[in-house]
Length: 342
Image: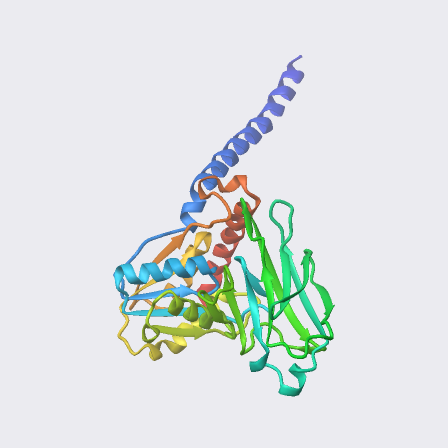
């Protein structure tokens, strides 16, 4: 009997320790869930002298940046970012307009017989993007794209002797929670000749294709693209300095900060304060990287606009929110280590 009591007592001790560990893990998990998003999506501002806009932000965030510039009267604006992806994303109803007179040789544009389009899309409400393909005012085809890139080829009627414009129209934009229906265009081929998307003579026209919200999309990097968008939203070109960075598969935020440090002399302004304009949980990493790279002589702030793909107050209920928080948590730890060597 005495031996049995000793055995039971010895068995209870590991269970007690395990119970304490579980309680501790639960408390830490609760603290992480309740505090981590606010920690990562930090907003703290300094005197509005220079606004640094991360060029990879979606267009609606660039518009918010323009509002921030106008509201607080920043002296200068820096746009950053590396190379743009191969595909062009149509995030609103509208279309890509190819002005063939500015693209193809005269003898080629008069002899068009086939048009091929490579594109894909993301769904919302289980419906993929719908595309209407036009040759001037002639509707060549209406079709739905798929998740994976696919080539769609069409013959032009022999009655068409000359085509001035090819229009790739996106007609059914929608947003379902964190699911955003977007059309991605990779390439347009005219009789086998690839034009691509970021080409002189190619324009993105939003909405009704009436030319009122139309821009040329020949920018090769996010920094130049953000600069062009800010100009569209009313920011004077003289106030904006685009600083592109070399392409990197990793450490992109760090490479952007290093590019700014290298080119900051182009701004021709004694800089004493910079506010970084960014989105969501990426803010903490950007704030840390730019402070470390540019040094203590400049006061840094950061403005984090909420993500529109999940509810920041309940981020753990969304797959996108969970992925964002976990990824940026790990990235923060990684950058905390890497920046020791910068």
